[in-house]
Length: 150
Image 1 (cartoon, rainbow, N blue to C red):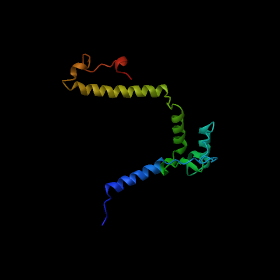
Image 2 (image 1 turned 120 degrees about the vertical axis):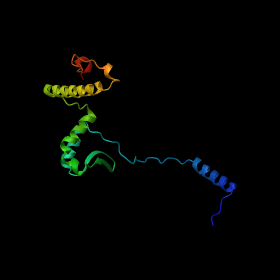
Image 3 (image 1 turned 30 degrees about the horizontal axis):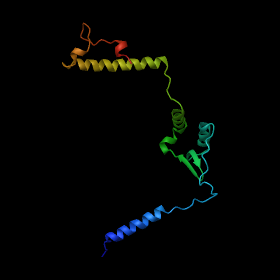
Image 4 (image 1 turned 180 degrees about the horizontal axis):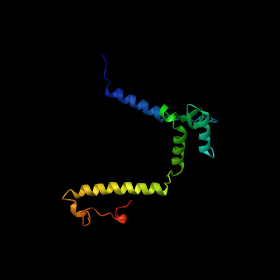
């Protein structure tokens, strides 16, 4: 059967712990740090790409002392590692905004207009929203590129 300590025993234990915590030890002198400072290469992307090309298992991020920090992609991602890692690093180091051709831009605008017109036609069926959508003589919604465009 366990015994319950008395209040005096609890206070004595707290005082002993407090005394131990207050006792200060001198820091050791002439001791080397456990880890060396992190060495950051001037062209980190090139180093990471070179490591990725040489390693089949791990994509090394950086090393610190005896530890190496890295990422291992799963089996599905290994199929796309050449494209994916490049895009990821480019997105982290600079903006990755794909440039679209004029034909792709026009296609996006056409798809947006088509979807917006479907939504406007659906809103015209509801009597509550009918007054907010301008229509032509045939009761078709009007499209104003300046107001409704992307």
